Length: 159
Image 1 (tube, rainbow, N blue to C red):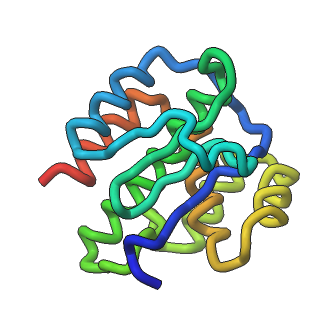
Image 2: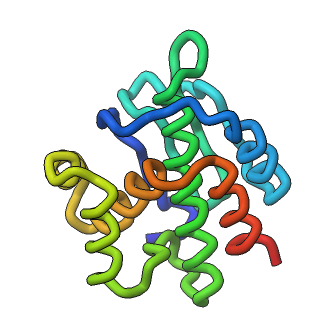
């Protein structure tokens, strides 16, 4: 699969969403890294809340004013940016890979952050080939603040 064609989509899954005052800082950091953020592009009508592609384009979908779910989507899609940066740092030009290399440690962390019902729901909505990527992204969005994610983007993505 070509790296440019890889897209990771955030479906509508209830999460531990919260409005995060650091989201503006996070969006500025993403912009500094060269991520183009599109707000409510035409594809938003397809039922997804967000998307990141390895062409460094993030799409955020919402109606009305941004709310807690919108902030959560920005954090989730930023996790995919981090996964992309981690793959590039490791020499993997194919796309997106989990940040945590050790699958056992990653699964333990995800199960500490997300409820088992949430994990099951994520697995039911996404194909098996992206379970680990999505589980890590949902857990990261729930665990990290926007300011923490901005720091991680600087650490993983900026040279």
